[in-house]
Length: 417
Ligand SMILES: NC(=O)C1=CN([C@@H]2O[C@H](COP(=O)(O)OP(=O)(O)OC[C@H]3O[C@@H](n4cnc5c(N)ncnc54)[C@H](OP(=O)(O)O)[C@@H]3O)[C@@H](O)[C@H]2O)C=CC1
Ligand SMILES: CC(C)CCC[C@@H](C)[C@H]1CC=C2C3=C(CC[C@@]21C)[C@@]1(C)CC[C@H](O)C[C@@H]1CC3
Image (cartoon, rainbow, N blue to C red; front, side):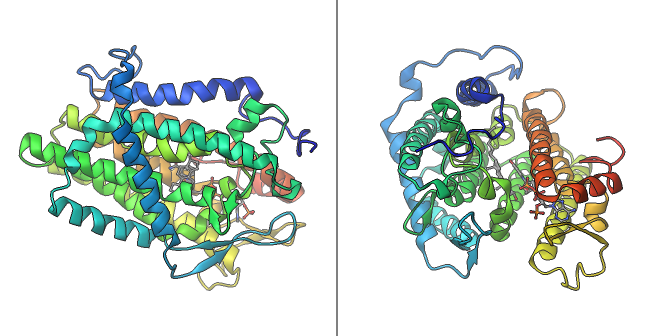
């Protein structure tokens, strides 16, 4: 079969960039895990030591990861309060997706709560982070390989616009098939929102419990980090349907980048602040804690306001919440908002997300750069994502997109960028 989209522009630095990222992403994750538990906690220094294979490999960790995936898959298959339709595909069909992510979060919390009451040693989890991250990375590699093989027999109409260059490393990294499924089980949609995001808050909780065991009670800084990130994950699952319009679902294939990102990178690096706090307690007074809460609230207000405004508008432009907003027409028949949040900058939701990222790091103090890794990485990710989205919008909307850019000149931060 001729590779689809072989003339499409290569992203992420082409095959060389993809090969480098294949090694760099897992290496960075292990570096962060090792540095977070070391005394100096120096983000930019060498790792404190190179772990032996025995410290990384544990069949129990692999079993635990597989059990976790099995549990989340079972919760995904439970009856959903709603079944949503995805965007129209190349062959004009639409796929169905269960909307039961929040239900999965609540049921997981209940099961974990019962488990803890019955003696499940959740606070032992932080000691297992290295072998768990290793097992998750292994699963992501094998899973991506299976997805790559599955795409070899998929019809051309099922392939993603990128990720089909013909170069095996590049295609393995980006992912060839757009919506790999077995029957109605959608692997990309499942991975994007369930095991990694819920795993992230579970790891945070285990770190909080271990801190309580070590120091008598969890610190205020640990409470804040847990609370803010639980709000973020709860919000994502509550508004699960919105993920169906993201470029990950509509445009990107499912390959190593998303499989590793969803299954390993999110739970083990997004929990970095809580990991840091366990090994580097940070005293935090109420006045500073209140300021940090305010920063998170402002970030969340912008993030949620912007996302909800766009979602409401895309669902029904005459919705009374958005009907008064100014718009411009495009040749596709879809309109673009040019007032409200989307008239302030072209990605107000990214701005809110970045403000929240700052609030998640501040409880860890300012003596180390390590807890700010998420903010730095996330800024790079969103700047790159914004550029990718811009290219896609330019292709979709042409002249109308230029008009929008003239009307709203700043991308993420008003008057700065
Ligand atoms: N924590 C994390 O690691 C990550 C978090 N995120 C968050 O996920 C959320 C979703 O992000 P993402 O998928 O990147 O992108 P967006 O939700 O910003 O969606 C971009 C799309 O919105 C539509 N759009 C753009 N401008 C307008 C306008 N003026 N009026 C109406 N529609 C417009 C276009 O699609 P169309 O016109 O086709 O509708 C465009 O392609 C964000 O809040 C982001 O911060 C994202 C990545 C990683
Ligand atoms: C490993 C690489 C560096 C890149 C990995 C990227 C992924 C971690 C992210 C790609 C898009 C994501 C989205 C979210 C989480 C991170 C990933 C999977 C959200 C689910 C986070 C919560 C938001 O409310 C919605 C996001 C959609 C995109």
